[in-house]
Length: 532
Image (cartoon, rainbow, N blue to C red; front, top):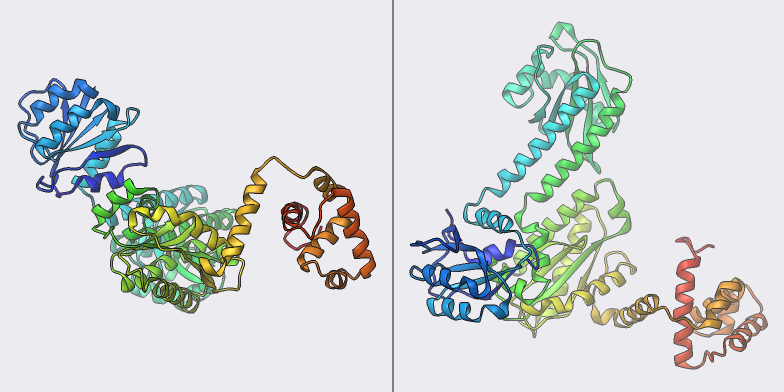
């Protein structure tokens, strides 16, 4: 069993599941086992145990706690309300034990399962690989059933990843591949001589390989597994009797899409540090951040920063977007670790997030910007994508980093509309962020200027003129030029809008009201091409 701390366990719990209201004394031993204790249990040896005290809540737990503390455990998990546990806290504090307050509605089995996973950890890599194999074998079996064939899935190096149930209808190549977990060399050369791999690399469609009785080969249909332009592997179907049915290519194309998605997911999950929940926990609030910092041995007292990296719309819609997200996170983690070994990299709301703790505030901003620029530059050079980055403002310490999350996300949204590859801090888009915040609040409000809202809905020509007038910064000549109108026409329409609405567009307050209405009208009246 592995020795862990209560923060290790707390870091894996769902948000709101439990809170550590009393931390174990510094002299308390690490947790080496778990123990379920009923209120009526006697003579309990609780040393070095994570104790789940069940069947009692609040003050009714005191007798059981006193028995437990004859051999104090590092921490006790107990359900109840904090106001009912003042005496329990005093008892545990005196003994040097911690108290984990569990939500009354929480499931003890869930807590036990998470504690066991921490105290008796399984290999993360082997766990993910086992899940991948289960998924691939299931896909292989289903494909075999739909096509009445034998199915084999290989990686790009011809290593066998999965196959369908073995029958007597497989040829020598298939038997040898399954036994050796890779295609025999002489058959690989034969398939290459037949042009099978050349054709597979050229197309994304299924490729047929005729039978060669003289070499002991039955007819095959194969397809390459692509992630963008990268080949991830192959699926091979071998006929088992009556030949392939008319829908074999359709089924194989669908199977290839499923297998490619699983391989990309596996590639992205191999790095434990890419786990999304670690980033989410640090950014959720001070208690969760403290637990994650303690568990990950991340310095939390000094300034910290959040960097968010987004991908362009085109990159996000590409066939290999999932793979690129993982590769971008891997690239970011290498740069971040070189900059600060304790940096945490992962995913946050679909974007790559970098948390950089333990900063020197006097020199941090320029260094963080250089870090983001290096990531964006190398992603464009080596990954063929066009990311952009937002360098959030410094938080005074890691536990308050959650307070800058919203403004960093708002900054990233602004940067995403700028030139490709832009890296920015709040100062670069401060006015735009504030305007968008005002527009967001306006959209969520039920109140509208009645006459202006009516005018915009009923007179599209006048509305479009007003929009162009504001875009031209109230320059009538420029507005007329953009709309191919006479200046007098612009004057007339603006004067009409002033008369109908009672708004004075030279007043900062009135012009702001009009601008918010125009922005909303434009967003609902125009498609992405800017045309009605």
